[in-house]
Every structure is written in C-alpha cells, then in structure tokens.
Length: 217
Image (cartoon, rainbow, N blue to C red; front, side, top):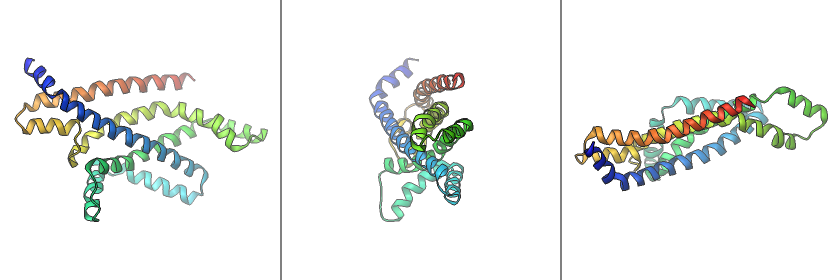
C-alpha cells in the first residue's frame, strides 16, 4: 500500500498533465463533434433524401470503423501526404470523425422522439417553422438527448486512452512510460484505471440523473 501511495505522490504532477491533455482532447473533440452532429441532423431532416442518404452512409462508416484505425489513418496518412501533423491534432481529427456520427444519431433520435402531433398543430396554427423549431422542437430534443449524449461522452473519454497509440501524452501513455522505466505495471495500471473510474462514475451519475428527468418530463 505504501508503495502505491508513493507512486501516486511521485507521479501526481506528470499524471496531472496527462489528465489535462486527456480533458483537452475530450473537450475539443466533444465540442466539434456536437456542432457537426447537430448540423448533420438538420441536413438530414431538411435536405433532399439523396443528401440524407449520404449522411447515413457516413454515419454507418464512422461507427463501424475501429477508432484505432482512424487514429492511424489521421496520423500516418497526413505524413504520407507530406503534411505531418502533431499527434494531438491527429487524435482530435480521428475522434471528431467517429464521435460526430454517434452524436448525429443521438440528436436524430431526439428529434424523432418529439410527438408528431406538435408538428401538425404548428402547421394548423400557421406557426412559422423557425420559431417553432427554436422554441418548441429544440428544447425537447435537448431534453431527450441529454442522457444519451452524456453517456456517449463518457465512452469518448475512455476512448481517449487509444490516443497513446500515436504518442499523445495522456493518461495511459504516461502509465506506459512509467512501466517502461521500471515502475510496477500493476500499480501504474491501477493508478490510471482509478483516474478513469472516478471521472466515469461522475459522468454516469450525471447521465442517470438526466435520463430520469427526461423520463419524468
């Protein structure tokens, strides 16, 4: 136990920076994916069916391709094209590519969850589409999608550990560096797992609370 506490105390500054990098990767990927996912949802709803089909093909492709392959494609592909990018940038590109597809599906499901009778009532009353969308539809979509959105973001945070494969300095890569330098593998993995567990428990609790509120509403 004392050995573990010593490892925690000695590695705290380094793991603190690694955790910060993981949060930067998560926050940047999440914000960009949310914006793009919402835009794709609007395109799928409003655009021609052929455009919507392209959106769904992209969504299927992004969700069925392993994230690790996307990371390698973003990092090594850019190098092969003569435009080398940093590991962090490559990781953000890969995570945005596949996370956008999941957020799109969440927002689309939230839209489908809005009762159709409200649309018919809006048409019957002559309510303009934009005020109806912003004042009635969007708030309901947000409420319905909030729980699944946080759940998917929890998974995205765990997936940031894959970025260690392209040398992004995050939690797992820091743990691996300590292991290669002679530290106990069990202790380092336990420390990294503990960091993920604490944050994921908080996110899962938030997801459950939002899901209960949506169900009650």
